[in-house]
Length: 159
Image 1 (cartoon, rainbow, N blue to C red):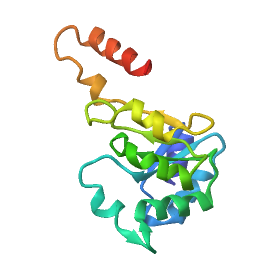
Image 2: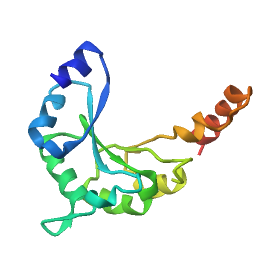
Image 3: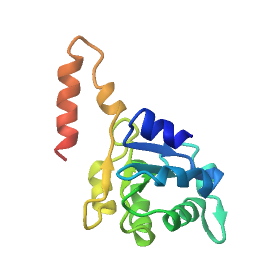
Image 4: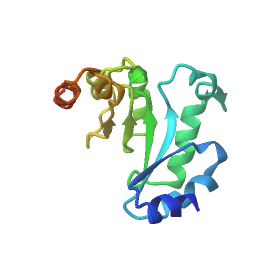
């Protein structure tokens, strides 16, 4: 019903999903053509390590999650959230997840570098959807907010 609500009733193009209830909670989102399930994998928030780096069968949980999710999906209907502050892990992730897009939040205010993300996480098709929210939204608190935000957005887009 969540997939139907988001993809049919609200006509979203993509939904971010926590995969920790298992495949049966994700597969309904994969049944929609030209829609994306964006699965949390290796996020940039400070306490993410508490769970995402835990070991499962000798590998970090984020890797186990990504591998399980790739078994039930295709690169055309699933991407993974990988925080920009984890740019040093992107090459490792690409070694077992070469074709999926990565949604990469955390450029700007969280300290992530778009240059590092591109250098370590690109694949043959680009494969990255880099996001900077707070760095743009909170670029200025004066009456010049719109102009400053536009300038920062343009600078970020031209990296």
